[in-house]
Image (cartoon, rainbow, N blue to C red; front, side):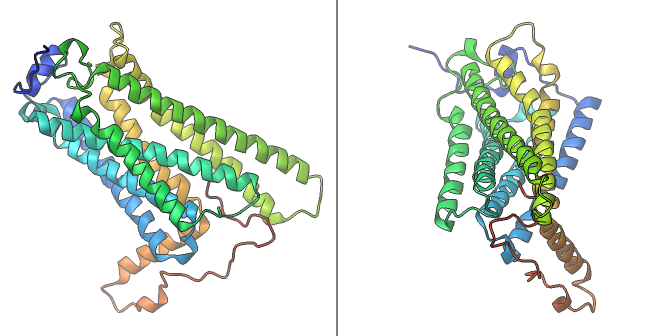
Amino acid sequence: MKHCFYNETVGFFYNNSRKELTTYWRMTDVLVVALGLTVSVIVLLTNLLVITAIIINRRFHYPIYYLLGNLAAADLFTSIAYMFLMFHTGPWTAELSLKTWFIRQSLLDTSLTASVVNLLAIAVERHQTVFTMQLHSKMSNQRVMILIFCIWVTALLLGLIPSYGWHCLCALDKCSSMAPLYSRSYLTFWAISNLVIFLIMVVMYVHIFIYVKRKMTRMSKHTSFHSDYKETMISLVKTVTIILSAFVICWTPGQVVLLLDGLDCKSCNVLAVEKYVLLLAEINSLINAIVYSYRDNEMRSTFQRILCFMCYRNSKYTPAVVKLNTMDHRTPSQNGHFTVDSSI
């Protein structure tokens, strides 16, 4: 019968995994916390702005924007989870109960997984609409809500599994170095799952990229093709490139480090880069809001209206001038071509 260590302290497991647990604040700890909180606040405010814009502007009441809103909600949750981590890290870690430690990690795992799975859902939606020459998916609102529900169920399952059994409290020899209460097998599973999703996304976006390039080359031979279509195609290529680059740069290091820890790489100093790769993944939540939303002209215009409304709400400025629920003169094309909408 296995002996479990449910009554031990967090420090006991950190000592078992040979992970340093400081009792005083070092300069690096202060810098990491300060930078982490700063990024988290920016991510929170930026994604809150995105969610508000999608809610108040009826032109965004389409499947792709609902998914973008859910991505913003996931990234907003990520910022909250990261802030919780910042207030429970460094010397504060030693004071945590096992339950609080698991909550801290589960919040991170759930939020980060929700962001990644949502990115995959957006990739699938964009792949379908680009290849069917549609501006918006014909997916019903009910199906979108079911998809969003499935995204969060998946994220919650992956985030809560360690707290309900997939840990190392009863098998100290299987504890990881980066997360001393987690089993290395869970880290391996989580890292491989995310890397597989990452690979699928890369394949899909590369497919979109190749298709768009070929389409542009073919249509450029005809001088009569729709100018808006060409403009959207060019913007599409740029956006795809930014998305792929940002995702690769922000996520690959963290997943590789987790995988190395899960595989119990003795010669890999994973603890030296642990906090930095996590911060890099958090920064991706900020990049998501910028790339997926700010590059959209209508979204940018809505941002400006929201900010103007906030600036003048206490003055004599008439709110009616700032129509948040804008009825822009531009309308989606009904002729099968894209209008100038660069969301991808």
